[in-house]
Length: 236
Image 1 (cartoon, one colour):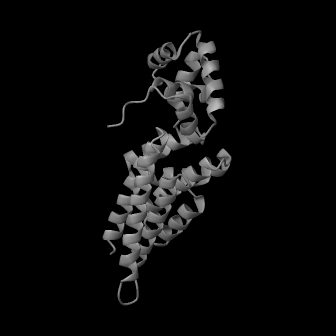
Image 2 (cartoon, one colour):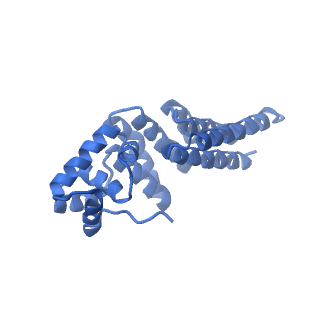
Image 3 (cartoon, helix red, strand yellow):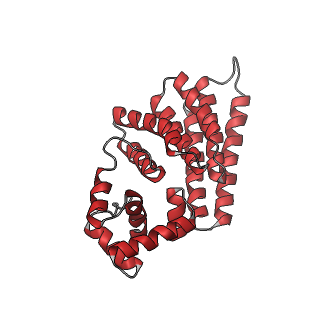
């Protein structure tokens, strides 16, 4: 159970990721199906924990169950920071820094989605980043830094390249972030979801960017983003 608990969590995490992608493109059926799959994973883990003999399931299994429950909230689009906080505390008690850091990142994400101020989001996100740096977990570090950029939380050295490109184009850092997403082909609605702003606010940013760059359409703005290196490398 100590080892299989993690497998249950990884399965729930994959389903949550797929549900979020489906919801982003408006595929409600796929999002609902993936949420149900995550719930089924939680049910199977719950049954395994309930059937554990002796003194009950080990603390590791119970900690992973908390992660699975939190992933269900993420899959359903109703992420609750408190669910992730419970997982953070469980893994902190077990001294499993990397798992606690993952839950910290998700806690920060849930807070940002609920409209919390950047200064409130910063504490768990900065802690997660410190663990990623100390442990040398490059993919996780990149994920934390991407969330920090979207949530407007400062992390060490994270915004240097964005600032440079923004300055060359005469844009604010937020406008540079919008332009980066625009260059990736995102719609105003998708930009809003990425940056935790409304679609209307994203539209205003896009209009200002076009005006500042002196271009007439999104394609020309994307070309400018490529010229100054504001386009992120594709995810492999």
